[in-house]
Amino acid sequence: MPTQPLAVRACVFDAYGTLFDFGSAAAACGDMLGDKTSALTTLWRDKQLQYTWLRSLQGHYVDFWQVTGDALDFALETLGLDQPAIRERLMQLYLSLECFPEVPAVLRRLRDMGFSTAILSNGSPPMLESIVSKAGLGGLLDEVLSVDEMGVFKTHPSVYRMAADRMGVPAGQITFQSSNAWDAYAASAFGMRVVWCNRYGQRRERLPGAPDREITTLSDLPGLLTLA
Image (tube, rainbow, N blue to C red; front, side, top):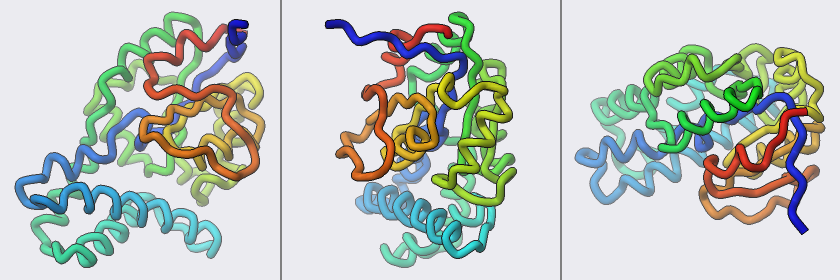
């Protein structure tokens, strides 16, 4: 029996890993990283996320730019790559991450269908402004929302509440898209409808909440939705 489409009014997207490829920074620096490119990408991302969770628990918030730099410093030292020139280049590349190929067309399609669109990200406002501008997505988004406004990182419920408030749409009429399983589950637990874009073949989490749908590319998203 066909699955019923999700009836919503707004589509909210995570940024890093969902709309933008966080691996593109290290990939563009492969001439300096060599055979450690993949390891650097993985360790940098893992520490970046760990630091957001730990700082939220400790009550010691700093913006995502500092977290990203701290995580990079850890990764570079661990891999024996702690050279100022490499660090500077990678941090600058993080401000111009590539968006995934399907993203512009998907956002245009959703706008044509009548949905409001937004980003909800751990990224600081300057970081998000940079990557959105570089990708030419500004005209396809109604809001670009940063956790900076709340002073705490995902998965704190106040972050998802802020998005619903700013969009002016009840949580149950928002579909939230993230490639990060922990983020998808947290948004579901808050009360949003969730489409998990499982780009990286992750296993399902053992956490509160559960995605309503699972896809591997955002190209499949418009076909899952109807306007409430």
